[in-house]
Image (tube, rainbow, N blue to C red; front, side, top):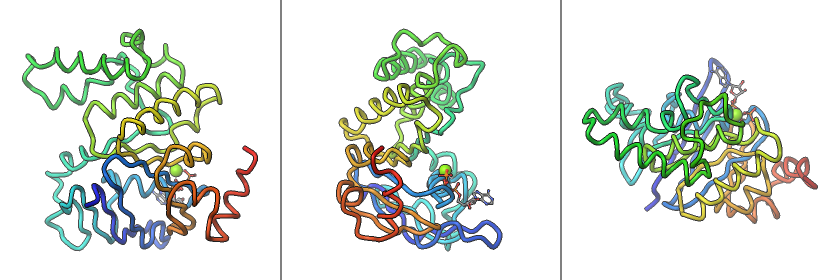
Length: 253
Ligand SMILES: Nc1ncnc2c1ncn2[C@@H]1O[C@H](COP(=O)(O)OP(=O)(O)OP(=O)(O)O)[C@@H](O)[C@H]1O
Ligand SMILES: [Mg+2]
């Protein structure tokens, strides 16, 4: 059974259909890369999965349990949203760290808010430090975001997302705001998460990275899935002409 299953997701903004008939599944421990040109609906899809947008149609299941069904209001209760969001962790393009908190505080804040029993906060801090160390940031715990490079800030954001132990970690173009050298250090961290079988969805423009790190690739265009399949096959031997055209823009890079 798939860990995550999305069935026939649709989303409109006004009269614009932004997502249409989006269906895919993701097994535990797998990494899925989503590629596609600007405006194809990639961010909107991640936002739907994270309940930052409400799909107009479709069903989302995690671990075999329906957590959203557009046709069933009982699955859309505001009071349950917060818990449902915990299935997913989201890492944004622009890091979105809290500027007034240190790296460690950024990582532990949400966990502490969920843990009123302060006697456990020492354990939460220890785990926060462990996650920062895993990101290569063991000596940056007390630094504020403005004292960190973009690549370091993004690695703090990844630690923060992992701190809540999501079932699926989602990345929306995690390196597109970074210089090439800082991109490398963030991709390395994501690659090591994949090696540890972290279940992930990665929206990316890094085609070689998608090919090497993802198990499956989805190519989106105009709000639909044009092609999906094993990463190497989709990137190196796409079946659809639209995928070929899109990828030809990246050849040589
Ligand atoms: N809140 C909104 N209201 C109206 N239209 C929106 C909204 N959010 C996104 N759109 C439109 O939906 C379409 C898909 O946008 P989306 O941000 O999902 O694309 P994307 O694939 O993530 O693009 P990019 O690669 O540039 O990030 C675009 O045409 C966009 O203008
Ligand atoms: Mg986007």
